[in-house]
Image 1 (cartoon, rainbow, N blue to C red):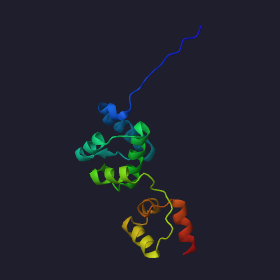
Image 2: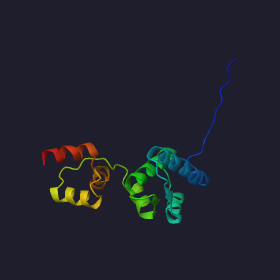
Image 3: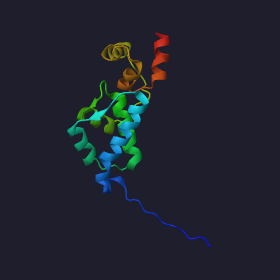
Image 4: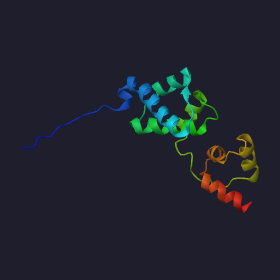
Length: 134
């Protein structure tokens, strides 16, 4: 005879105490992958703890991935977290990007095409296509 087990896990917005431990876990995953020791400032942690998380744990993981992508250093501050929360589609394609915008982004990130693409709101692959045409 089979019995059904029903397990109900409350959404992350109802488990605020889990946000920081999960954040540390996701930062550790990024550290292992990128070989850099990322950390959040106190203000960035506060922003995460106050976020409603309609997308639950997966949303938190994606926010951390975007923050790591956007940061130039190991420190992730409140500006980066705010940007990571408010811009969920970093890799969306924009219809028109000027050559000046591309040059400025590449200059700002010392030629780092991944970060320049993120700044421009396009994928790295799309940036390479544009650069090939230039």
